[in-house]
Image 1 (cartoon, helix red, strand yellow):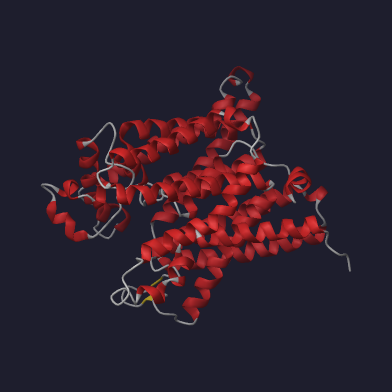
Image 2 (cartoon, rainbow, N blue to C red):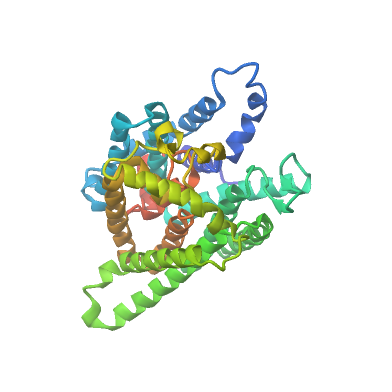
Length: 433
C-alpha cells in the first residue's frame, strides 16, 4: 500500500478543513451546535447567542484568511475585479462610522470581511477540480444530514402543517440553496472530469460520476420537497444565462467582426439576464391577477417597498451596513412594520443600497462588471460552471438577503468570480507546507 507523503497529508487536511468551513457557513450546523445554549437564554443571557454565532464563524474562517494572505502575489491587486471588491468591502467597513446602529454594523462588517476572504481563499488554493469537489462535499454533508433529519423526524426537520421539508436548516429557504448548489456542483464535477478523461484514471472518472449523480438525485428530491420557489427560479435563470453565454461564445468564435465583443461576452450576458429578470419581477409583482400563493413575490413586495423607501431616504451613504432594519428611524411613519420582526430586506441588492447607499451600489456593479470579464477569457469547461454558480447567487439574491457575511452563498459568489485559479501542482509544491 502506497504511503502518503507529509505534503499530501497536509493537502488532504486542508481540503477537509475547507469542506468543514463551507459546510458550517450554510449556517444550519452552527445554529444546531448552539441550539441547547439558546434554550438557556432566559437564565444565562450573556454572552448572547448571536455573539456565539459570530465568534464561531470568525474562529472557523481565520485560518483561511491567514492562508489566503500568505498566498497573495504582487499581481493580485492589479486585477480590476479584485480592486473593485476591495474598495466595495472597504466602503461597507467605513459605513460603520455613519451607521445609524453601529453596534449592528460592526460585527456584520467583520463577518463580511471574513467571508469575502474565505471565498478568495477557495479561489486561490484549489484547482478547478478540487474547487468543485470542496463545494460538492460540503453540500453533500448538508444534503445527507438533512435527509437523515427528515427520515428520523428530528425536531423541526419537517413542517407538518404545510407539509414541506426543512432538514437541519430551520427554514426551507435555507435548505433549498444548499440543495441547488449541490446540483450545480455535481454538474460541474461531471463537466470537469469529462474534460480531463485523458489525464484521469477510468476508475476515478466512474467513481466521480456515480457520486455526482447520487448527490444530484438526493439534492433534487430535497429541493422538490422543500417547496421553495426561490432556488428553482434562480436555477432556471442561471441555466438560461449559461445557455445564452455558450451560444454567444460560439457566434463570436465564428464571426471575426465580433472579436472585439468576445472579452465582454459573459459580462453582457449577465447584464442582459439581470435586465430581463428585473422586468419580469416588476411585471409579475405589479400584475393584479397574480395569486397570493406566489410566496416568493407577493409576500416580499411590501418588504421591498419599505426597504426602497429607506433607500430613498438616505440615497448617497445609506444607513450603515445591515443597520437599517434595526434602527427605529427606519420605521418612522411605517411603525406597523415593526411587528414583523424581520432584520432583512429579503433582497440582497436592497441590502447593499441600504447599507452603503448609491456609492455601494455603483461599487458592487463595477465589481461584477470587471469580475465577469475574467469568465469571458476562461476556457468553456471552466467558465460555464462558474458562471452557472455566480448567476444562481445573483438571481437568488433578488429574493433573499444573501449578500452578507458568515453565509456560504456570498463566499461562493466571490470564489466563482475570482479571476484566477491556482494550478494544482503549483499549490501542492508551494503551499503544502
